[in-house]
Image (cartoon, rainbow, N blue to C red; front, side):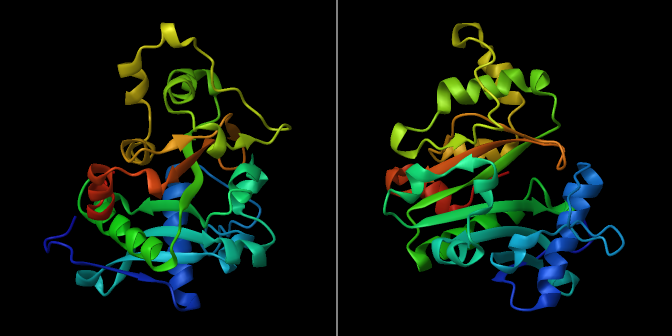
Amino acid sequence: MTATAPKFRVKLAETEAEVRAAQALRYEVFVEELGSDGAMVDHAARLERDRFDAFFDHLLLLDTTRADAVVGVYRLLRDDQAARAGQFYSEDEYELGVLRQSGRRLLELGRSCLAKPYRGGLGMYHLWQGLSDYVDAHGSDILFGVASFHGTDVQRLALPLSLLHHRHLAPPELRVRARPEYFQPMDLIAEEALDRRAAMVQVPPLIKAYLRLGGHVGEGAYVDHAFNTTDVCLIMDTARLSATQRAIYTKGAAR
């Protein structure tokens, strides 16, 4: 980290410069670290961006000891913003009919990341607190969004994908499905043959955090070759959070 302990502030991006700072951090994490790419990635300017950025709210984690450097981001899209965009981001990968037909307020989450020196500490706590405040302010009922495993070799991910399918599949009223043309089955190993402990080790920390809060996954995965990831759709019904889970959520879940 730095000689001085970081002091955090969370806010929504208000200027184009702040959005570009978020895109620059996303470039560091998703492109440089994880090998992702995409049609709108600007390698010359070192920005990871797409056409949805103009419609999302960008939640920023700032380190005030470094002149408010952007060290964490979360991308948030409400129903009304999705209507202006023409769709949710996830709809390129998943059929969201069951959520859209629920009559409840939806909030799509995505592009969550922290700068490398800030992982494993209080950074994610502050981002989750900011997210909690945003959810309360807008009365969001269902949180959802794609979360990723690094890499596109599904067989290497057979253990964790099978664990998610057998143990954490969303109830029917929340169970989105990967689009038929991209549907990648997740039940690659029979439940009775699963080594649950070994499987959970391979589950990324952010997905584990959602599962601890009572989150579920949709049916089927999406293999994103351009982004070099295998995606699952996470869904969390805020009304189903127990008092204990809600305390974790409002105090932050460690990544």
